[in-house]
Image (tube, rainbow, N blue to C red; front, side):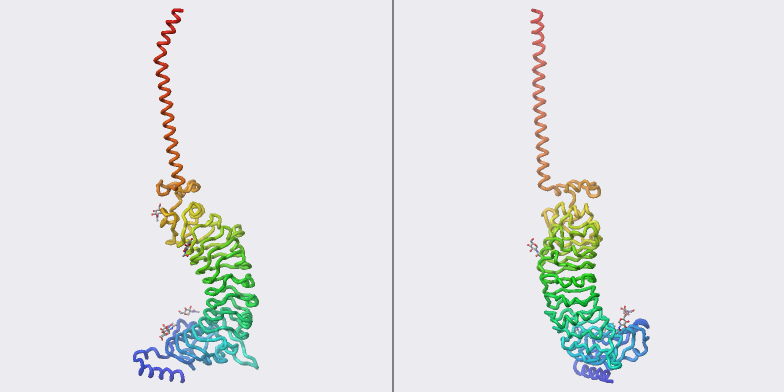
Length: 475
Ligand SMILES: *[C@@H]1O[C@H](CO)[C@@H](O)[C@H](O)[C@H]1NC(C)=O
Ligand SMILES: *[C@@H]1O[C@H](CO)[C@@H](O)[C@H](O)[C@H]1NC(C)=O
Ligand SMILES: *[C@@H]1O[C@H](CO)[C@@H](O)[C@H](O)[C@H]1NC(C)=O
Ligand SMILES: *[C@@H]1O[C@H](CO)[C@@H](O)[C@H](O)[C@H]1NC(C)=O
Ligand SMILES: *[C@@H]1O[C@H](CO)[C@@H](O)[C@H](O)[C@H]1NC(C)=O
Ligand SMILES: *[C@@H]1O[C@H](CO)[C@@H](O)[C@H](O)[C@H]1NC(C)=O
């Protein structure tokens, strides 16, 4: 058989050229995890063409089983027709080869192909024609194939064929990340919007700065999208077209400067939002999160210039609060407003690695509103300022705040410390001491005056009395 002959040729070449490297150029292994789960391992074998048959054990597997065929990290350039493979669900990985061509009918023998990984190859848009996904030819038409997951990441795709998804009606996950798409042109948009079952779409690292409305018009099932590592200066408005289904939005590393009340408009079903690593993001403005009426998890991390979150950022959400996890780690925040959110309703809060100014507002959030109980263990943020509190855990700063002294937990066992005194308190103390001293002096003066008065009176009285007596006796 061609494939085994090829292996032998490689072995010989290997022997001649690279000595010990030969050991790697051998036929595929079949791993039977259990009778319903079989892997054909052809990874890293120096294979340069699609095998023309599978190891014999594969013929014996249960026809309902899940079969994974991996040709990861070989040097295949041309994907010719795959030999028939059994199994109710077949997954094929051609990741990390050198593919530049895929033949019509390549997967035609594998009707039950549900997963195909073509990532890390050299595939261009021209290679991706609808014919490559044609199923078996019956009665003058090509059947569909079962494909659900298609990974095209890290290729050389600029544009997609308008009919690419013609034979893959069940496509639910599509990864186009790290391709030089740059502009979603008319045909690419038609292709995308024809994949109406799409639930997961990865467009990260594609160099795009805009998504035209039409791209999303057909995607009535889209639940998850990744738009990271692109050139968006705003969150694309077109997302609102999929707002009723979209649950997960990842928007990392884009050149946005602010988030505002337009950013997430219409995303009323969003469950988890991640906005991180945006080097230029400085500000989250009022009502930014207001449209996100079902949001449960918010990641707003690793934005090194994010300095300000409006106290009205969650405006209108407080009555029906849904957020459980909020991560604000690794930003450039120094203050948060006490009424930013109902802190006590969170389950997890992350605040590490910011420039926290440990003032009474922060103490209020952490202690009185119990945000301090939501930190993960080992992830207690600490103060950056004022200087005398720098490095102190923010859960340890409550002592000096007057309104907090009445809260039983924090205040009861608090020991007095000069470290906790703020200038204002110090002034009051000095004033107090001065008042006491003054009062003491006045009291002393009064006593002295009284003494003098008493002495004079007592000493002079008998004389006077005598005198009076004398006088009266005279009288
Ligand atoms: C098959 O086995 C692999 C490897 O142990 C495992 O990761 C996978 O979840 C299994 N799949 C099924 C359907 O049991
Ligand atoms: C497949 O084979 C390669 C090369 O022998 C090996 O490195 C790899 O661990 C194998 N994979 C599995 C899942 O057994
Ligand atoms: C594939 O294998 C080669 C060695 O044969 C190695 O240099 C390369 O890094 C591997 N690629 C991947 C993606 O693992
Ligand atoms: C697509 O999915 C449906 C529902 O699971 C299934 O009935 C149908 O056979 C699938 N289509 C193909 C071509 O496998
Ligand atoms: C954080 O903000 C301060 C000004 O408030 C600025 O000086 C500093 O460079 C910022 N940090 C980073 C990592 O950008
Ligand atoms: C925080 O306070 C507790 C108890 O008051 C103390 O045991 C702990 O050492 C303090 N931590 C820091 C970092 O000062």
